[in-house]
Length: 298
Image (cartoon, rainbow, N blue to C red; front, side, top):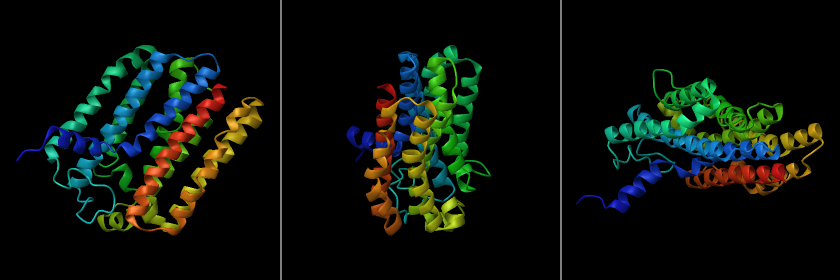
């Protein structure tokens, strides 16, 4: 008996990994808020940036689903959420085509972004898609050699935030870049939970993430440092430098709400528990973006 429409939609929704989408949404929210705070918000650009970022993230997730299966990284003993290709819910061919289709759809908002922002955004778009595929594809995948953290920090941080800001304000500022670092750090925290959960499976598959290279304690320190840097250091520094945006200190509250997550990352190794921590970290990232945006716009 074939799958129902609802079942197929559920499978593809799961393959898109919605818990990771805050990493694509938060940078656009922050960049737009900063442009708004300078009286330079441009809503068509903001919407296109958001749609483009989400599509690239989904395309990357689908490509990862396919290539991790092909490389044998995803196995029946996987601790993380179900991967559609590995579980036999979607054929490898269908997953590969879906990834290509989603990446192709980026051309729709991308055409407007290119028209408004020029060639630099063509370079950013191509590199983002290329790195999204090469994260798990090719003879030397980014995520398999310990470079995933750097990739996430740069592309989900300064590139995404400053790019969104520039698309609207037609300029790049040091504050936009630094704010991007904060968002990027939280995106790295999201990745760190994933790598901490999968450390044994990744080691067996030859996937040399930083967690595999340096161990669980390193991953826990990395997670803690990312949260502290994003929620405490950068908002405080931005306020000290600008002397403005007192409400920009609001994101500091995220660190307080993150204390249970920090306790969890330091005490738990259970796959299901770390899966819940992954979802919690995604929520913290999205909440940070919203609070930062509210504080900067007030």
